[in-house]
Length: 57
Image 1: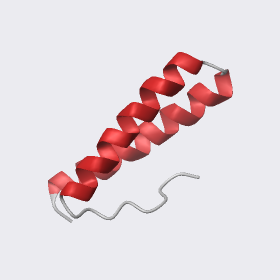
Image 2: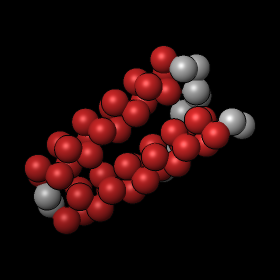
Image 3: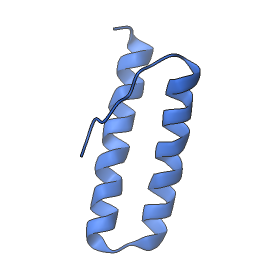
Image 4: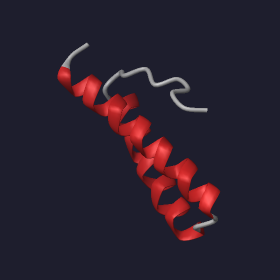
């Protein structure tokens, strides 16, 4: 795995974790921000052929 792929997957995992925390805390604004970031990261992964799957349930 190259550095780009590893870094991207790490950012996705961190964002998923932040999204879960925001949901747990009931912070609707932060949920929207984190979901937008996650969508962008997943789109970037798809554009570069990085398979994401489900990293954090």
